[in-house]
Image (cartoon, rainbow, N blue to C red; front, side):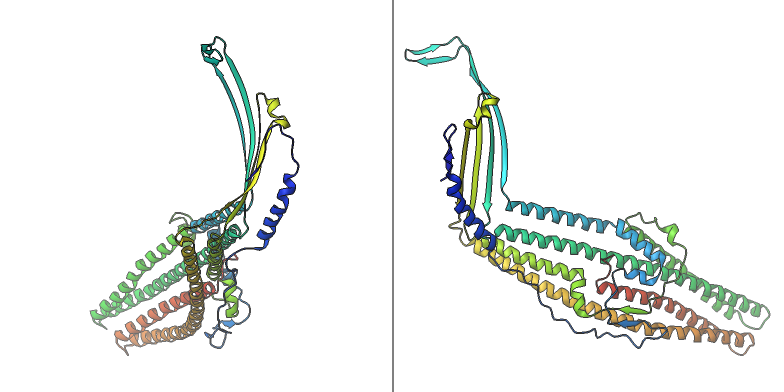
Length: 495
């Protein structure tokens, strides 16, 4: 029952002494008691080293090293100012990243709201009222009821404070704040994951664009060479050395090569449009900047990838999954706290008077202070079933974490193998281009000397064009494979 002192009564002075031991006991119990399991970082089995090793490094093959991974700003390892500029602008203007930033602010604000439950609430109120009776108001006295002829009015000024504090004796509110802290960390990691995806998407579309532009350059170069071949065959036809079939075959090959250029140009425009949107701009915003062809930047000579154990602390999706386990574990404690009684302290102090000065008088006070308890006695097992729900959600979070780790390991191993094999593929294509170039020169010499038919020329030119185009695609694929490796290693969010 609350202690109450009425206005005008002398202060007892003993209520503080009476409540202090109880309050201190509540605070002492609450300081060290929080029901529910404590979070422990999950254990994950990872290999000691990566198995997707690259072939022996050489002038053409980059070395893959076990040195600590340098992936914070991986795009700068390509030494391409155009790529650096696009990534930097994307990190400033991308709408998905701005959305993730807003979600982080939301989680931070939600955490602050939850933490406020640990503190008392205090409400203040001020009321003024004036009341009275009219001139004809009925009056009741010892001689019966009569009609009065005078009017009266009174003023009332009231000022008060009300306070309430739920004592978190069993840690339910603290577990809730712990869960909100983990939610905030998950939101931060989610934003970092968006950054990793963003820089990867910018790099992918940039390399795709430069690769398509180089394919157009190769196609235009081959088209020019094939048009010269058409002129040669037409001259030889007009002089009677060959039939019109050679002219038709040469013209058909040139037309086939020319037909590829609009398709490649369309794909290049699409890449520019995608890059513009990734930078938070309209699709044609980067057209003037990027439509001029530029070569694909070579991959760096060495690629440090670190050890698998480092991956667990670097990849945002793994860190996010761990934070989600933490949040789910803390919410088991929130649900468990409902099994126990809730204690609170409430108090109020009010001043009242017919004038402001009298309302401000200490003797016009009325106050109350006392503890309260609330305990759910019967709920048909609702609380315990809710605890079971929270346990199941925590188990799901653990399984999600384990799956995320396995997926991350797979992505790194796959990227390592792809990067290593693509380097071998590119070396073989370089040799194919060299040999096909020799074959074209030799075939043209033999054809103009009348020592071979035109089909050999067509075959040699077609093989050269195919190998040159494949070499450009392999160069692009090599950059994309390295990009995928950096992404799999969790690079980009520190940038």
